[in-house]
Length: 115
Length: 114
Image 1 (cartoon, helix red, strand yellow):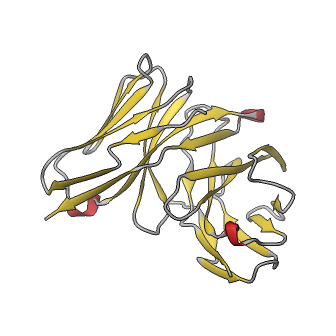
Image 2 (cartoon, rainbow over the protein chains, first blue to last red):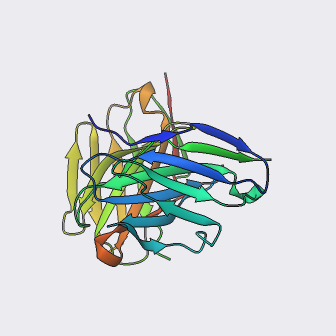
């Protein structure tokens, strides 16, 4: 069964460094998302992406964050200058259909640790 | 906010018993989804129920939705040790161009004791 994949599984970085988290959504999916989950807290929506542009972004998704679909398969989240509070699990997700009644399929996540 | 809130926050039962988890939300929804998360792992989609549906089954899972009360329940029958995980409900809001923003609750931590 097709699945969303994410790399790396764990990223450790120094505060102020740039990180790029990578995702390969399911191949025939059209919508792509990033979520994050700080340890012990809720899963929070960051951004949705469709047709090569951002559809919606949350308050968390400030100028330090950017997303890109550089080719037909990858979907990346970049954090330009990491902060301690960016430490979290980052999940990529994708859906196939145009919105209604579409399950979102999540990747296994990247654990980002900012020191 | 739209969020789903689960209760109880933690549930511990014996293997073979049924587990019921509840979710409440605040605003109108298109769909409600339930996910499972094993410790430190990703979210696994379990079941989606549309706002015009009242009940849905998938294997040992039964989900109900009461839009008048803005609540949903997830029942796992004949629980197994492998069901030990956190369970989240997520409500959705369609955003620009049909994208679907999920709002998650805090989750119920389910422990199945052998």
